[in-house]
Image (cartoon, rainbow, N blue to C red):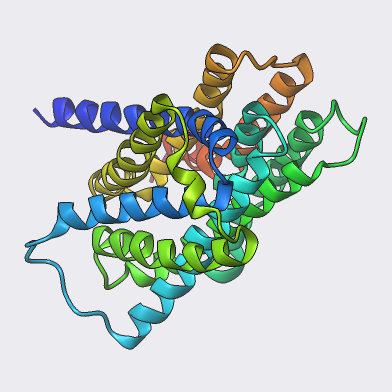
Length: 311
């Protein structure tokens, strides 16, 4: 019975990874139909309302302390406002396949920041992983140095880095605050932060949100409700069941599904050096997050037989 429950949890996480990989492609379509920042405002706002509706009436909802508010607002600034603004902007200047590969650095970057700010252990294998992952990025941005990073690629890197920073503050806040309540607050508050940003960067663009083809609105609501609101809720529920470490490993599937989706739906070409770079990133992530070290090297050490000296 326990095995069936675990397999069901794995299936749910796998489904979320498919959604998130596909979501990058959906965002690429949306930024071509709508102003990127303004579209992101409404998308996050819809996701926030959907997330809030899911938690209304729950007994574990509580008033936040001053410390919880501080961490929640910092996580919102980096994880919602900065991440989604740079993500939407970056996708207007580069293709979806490059985006998913750069975003594949998220688990590794989070691991590096956790070493610095949360006191996670620094080992030689993690350092090796960091190096391999950055070699992978050099390949995906042009075959290992054929050109410098484009503006779109830099924006996506900033989006990825901002989200990694937000995970540090989320980790601190959820020590005492339920992650589902925090997710709802982040999406709602963040949407108003993005709204303010849209007034500055895209003045008068709200009216253009009502002149897109029907298919764009269908994609919009799938992205907002399924990928963003439901996806984060299911992901957080999985963390509670099997732990953050095991759940985070599934993030490595996001660029895989993103590449497949961009090839199928956008007819984007995936070059050999991008595939090569992706392999470097996956190997780097597995080493850099400590997964290989914890589940292979240490397990071998534990399984090594111990002989007692006979008396």
